Image 1: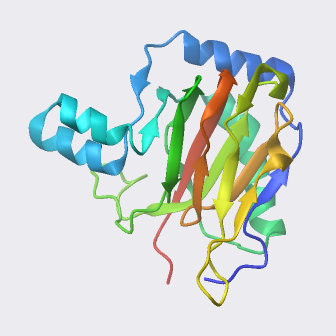
Image 2: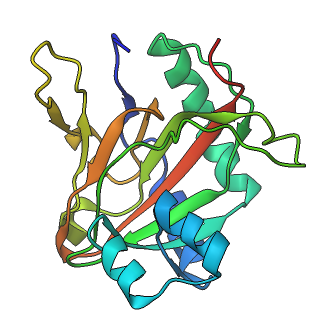
Image 3: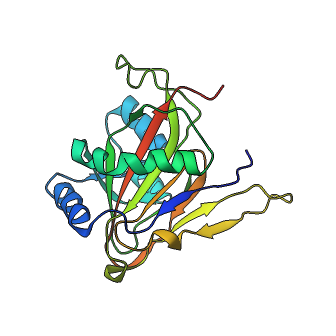
Length: 211
């Protein structure tokens, strides 16, 4: 799909106080290993991952996560999603957000190229999820850029004629409290952190499939 705007960003719109409160809220909960869809399916079948599964996972993703559902977090971020959806010209229909994923990347941790959209729709007794799919993804920068090196969020637009990647390093959201919104099918990655610790918050926003 050709887009006029592949992403929409807001610099330093979340106060340092809110960023620090999100970080502390995440740190107060037990962290889990960040998974990919492949490992999630393995757990559904086998209940747990073996050493081979984890080794395979770490070729693609190595990060620690915590799930958050605090309403004050959604209240702080939702207005920017609505503005981005309109200003970028996407105008996607969406009406629900998944749990917020608080992610920590320490030295050598990363998340390689992936899309947040699996192509499947949710089947759930919860009507907020059932029949819906991810449409808009959000990443919030919670850390001061002086606290880490590496860990850049990058996009691959992949829509040029010869099929070669068009990589954009999203330096726009380096300042603490910055937000970027993008269609969930857009390929992206987080490069390895080379020094310090990077904290971020990701939210996936759902709606019924495109028609």
